[in-house]
Structures are given as C-alpha cells and as structure tokens.
Length: 409
Image 1: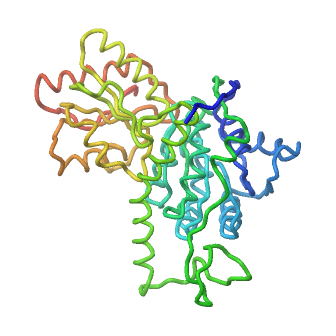
Image 2 (image 1 turned 60 degrees about the vertical axis):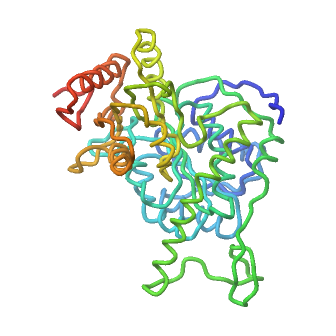
Image 3 (image 1 turned 45 degrees about the horizontal axis):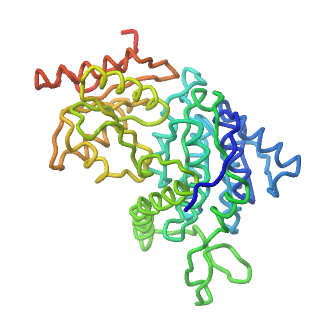
C-alpha cells in the first residue's frame, strides 16, 4: 500500500485527540471538562458549533453521566467518543464496568493526571492504573503524533465484532496534552474510509432470529439485564476471551494503518529500542519513553549495552511479546508512574515480575516509582537507573527491589 500524502499541523496532544475524532465519523460525543482534558471537549464543541462534523454533542453535569450517555448511544448503534482525566475517570468507575459488560465499543481519551488528595492537576498514571481490571483495552502514547494515530486505530479495534470492548487511549497530562508538536494528519476521506462504518456481532434475539447486537425496537433484545449466578460467570469469561483475541486485532489494525501512514509503533503492542543485544533495560509507558531513548543513545555511545521496552498496549498485557523482548536482558528496571500503596511496588512492576516468574528467562527485576504528581524525571535520573542496573550485574544481587527516584527522602 502506498503511503498517503499528509499535511503537518501544530497541535498539542488534546488538539490531536479532537482532530482525530473529528475525522472519524463519530455520531455522539458526551463529556465533562476537567483539567488537563478540557481542551479536547472545547475544541470538539467548536467543530460541532461550526458545522464541521455531524455529531450530537451531549452536555452533562458529571463524568458519570457523560459515560452513561455514551453507553446508551453506543447500545443504540452509534459510534461514540468521550474524554476525561483523574477524578473524572474515578467518578466513571461504576459505568466503566457497565460499559465493558454491555460490550459497548466506546472510545475514550484519558489525559493521565494524579488523583487527589492533595489536589494535583499534573501527570501520573494513578487514574488509569486503578482501572486496569475493568475490561477496557488500554493504549498508552509516547507523543502527540501517536495520540492522533492511536485514537483513529481505537475505533477499528473497539468495533471489531470479535472484540466489542471499549478502548481508552492514555496521554500524559501537560507533558503531551498542553505541549505543541508537529503532527502529520491524514486527509479526512482517508480516515473515514479507514474507520469505515460500525460493524456489529450477530446474536440470537428474543424472537429467535439472528440480529445485530444493538437496541432496536424492530428486533427486541436485552442488554445488561439482571444476571445472577446462573450466567454471570460465563459472560465474564466471554469478556476475557475477547481480551485474548484483542492483541491480534490490535496488531492487524496497527499494521494496516502503518502501511497507509508510514508510522509504526513497534508491533502495536510493544516497542523495542536497542534491545537486540541489551544486557540492561528499562520498561516504561507513555511520554517518559522519549527521555529514556535519549539516555539509551548516550549510553550506547559509551559502549553500554542498554535498551528500552516501551509497553504501548497495557491491556490486554502482551505477555509473550514482553518475554521475547527481554529474553537476552540480564537486569530490568520497571518504571512506574503510580504506586500500589502497600502492594510492594507499582502496577507495571507487578505485571512484569509476575509474567517472568514462570518464563524461561530470569533477569534481575527492580522497580522505580517516579514522577508522581507531575514531578520531572530528567536525564540524570534515568542515567542513575541504568547505573543501578550495572551495579546489580556486578554484585549479582538486588539490595532493594522497590525504589523511589527523584524524591526528597
């Protein structure tokens, strides 16, 4: 496939989200403003007011209501989008589970921001990490270009009849949401063709005939009814089966998009950076990967075999890909921008250490909690992490598996 001619726009991360949604033929948007997500809602409301999109914009009084409106619209067959951050995502908590349980393919941008208290409007991943078990696919972007590309891909992933699960795309608050970048954007007609029209799985309705899975008076069915111990367990297993199918779909959509746009993000699940012969490596999500790549380049220039594994798809967790990527690494630093209080480290550390337990590889694994509440993590701190890994290789022991970095002790 020939790479499509594109234009370059100066967009911050929030504007990149709004522009991608504008191009994706969305029927309904319902959202409530919260810093640092507000620009998404503001910009898209301007598209609606100016007649640039044929989208119903529903103003509501809270994020709980916003996602409830999105769920209802999606259940009726609409293509739906919303956006939130921090306490807004927390307020949605109940409806996150309802949305995935109803198999509604809602797409949501989560502008990652710390949870209170104390009140903080800056970035960490505590808001979305709390929701890792709610049966939403989770993608994390490194830069605003990837934000734009991932939102467009998310509609195709969510609406695949084999998946029919909601997708959240995470972008770091302020680091991406409010920072201007050059973003290459595809022509409107190309994006519209790529996302296509919404596809529906077919199920047996109340009248015994096969019908699209949506609420339709002509083909009555129930969605999300009372479901006690007789069937609830089976329906939860079906959600897990959809999650297990998702990696293949994510990779297929990513590859098709890459052939059209010329942009790859690893294989859509993970991105390897100088991992082929790496002896020490960091694992992280989000915008921090850009800084880590710079440090890896500096260390490589000094002859240090350093690498990076960036996890783009955190849910479903790409277990085999992570194991394969780390198979030659002797010491691994897992960087968490959130903390599981009392849980011995952060969520990403838990996941990585867990999947390596039964793997054929057993590198040293250490956790670094960093950047909470938007605390800066400059290159010198990343260098310190790699220095620690070199010391671990020399001493062959991990003195302290969970560490805080960039913190006044």
